[in-house]
Image (tube, helix red, strand yellow):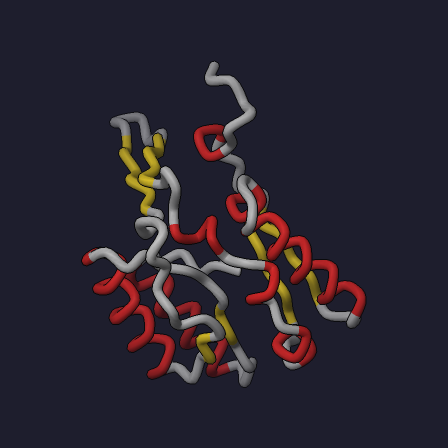
Length: 155
């Protein structure tokens, strides 16, 4: 449901998918603010260069682009801070998930962040359910971050 940009590693993953002759698509949301516009331009360019179909190109006017800031401690431990109150990724709609797009895919992948708030929760469930019903490979990245879930108390 979402591509996380991690510099050169992300670009390598997209290129490897293309080189393996996989038909790759992405369905995500970026905010319409300056960061979102720049990120969308860079992502769109990289995806286009590597023959990845963008299924939702419109920027979200209701929220900022979700960003994760990662701090690395001297002992190697990572800590995360998120700019997502709300984030554009939370505004992915159930109707954005098209049966024809799922049918044309071979793998449906989502991460737990998209389950943390509606309407993205329903869109994610729809995509995963359709993929399963159509016999697609369905994968899920359990990448829990309690800061992203409203109903979880902070430790």
